[in-house]
Image (cartoon, rainbow, N blue to C red; front, side, top):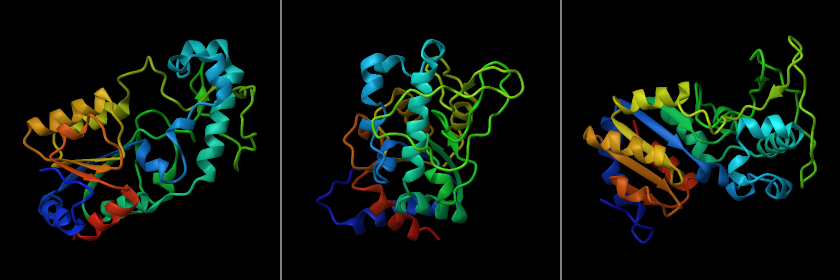
Amino acid sequence: MKYHPDLDWQPSVTSIMPIMQSAKHVLVLTGSGLSAESGISEDEDVLPELRGEVPLEHIRRLETYAKEPELIWGWFEWLRMRSMKAQPNAAHYALARLAEKITVTLATQNMDDLHERAGSHAVLHLDGYLNHSSCISCRSPHALPPGIPDEPSHGRKVAPPVCQHCGGIIRPGVIWRSVRNTQAWRTVQTVAEKCDVLLLVGCPDATTIQRLAVLVSRRGKPVLKIGNEESMMDPFADVVLKGPPSELLPRLVDCVQ
C-alpha cells in the first residue's frame, strides 16, 4: 500500500501503527535526505576545487589519497567543519526516542555525528565517520583537534597530520570505494535477516539498499520508506510516506508505546 502527500497523515499512521507496535526489532537505515534537513546538502559534498582536480568517482579512493593527500585531507576538514556546524533535526531525536521504546539497530550512510548528538548509541556508519581517523600505515587511531575546523567556504588544501606512533600519514575516516565488505555492512546484513521491520529514512537510490529491502521482503517482513525524494526504492517498500522526515518521523514514533 502506497501513500502520497495529498492524503491526510492520520490514515497513514493508523495503517503503520500495527506494524511498528508489533515489531520487536527494527532496522533503521538513514541517508542524505535526513542530513539535508539539517542543512547538509548532498550536492555540496564535493568542493568545486575537488571537482576540477579529481574526478568525482575517484575522490574516495585510496590511490587518490596517496597521490593527492593535501587535497583529500582538505576536503575531509571542510566536511568536518560543515558537519559540526549543523544541528540534529527532529527526525534524529525521534529515532533516539524510538530506541528507548523498542529494539533498534540504526545504520546510516551519512558521515556526520548528528545521530550521536541527538542521543543515539552504537550507530553503524556505513560510508565512514568524520570524527574518526587513523594511521594509514600502523592503523593506530588518531585524535582529531577539538573544536570546529576553521576552513574557508571554498575549501583549501591541507597537509594531513602525521602518526605519533610510526610517523605514517593519517587517513580520513571515510570508507574507500574499494572496501565493500566492512564490519558495519556485515552487521546490517545480519540484522536484515532477523529484523521485524526495515525502516528507510531519507535514503537515495543505491543497489546495496535495494538488496537489503529485497532480503527483508522475501522474509515476509515489511519495508517502510519515509522521505521527500522520489526514488527507485519506492517499488521495494510496502509503505511509502512522502514528506520531510523531520515532520513525519516524530509523529510516527509518538504513536509507538
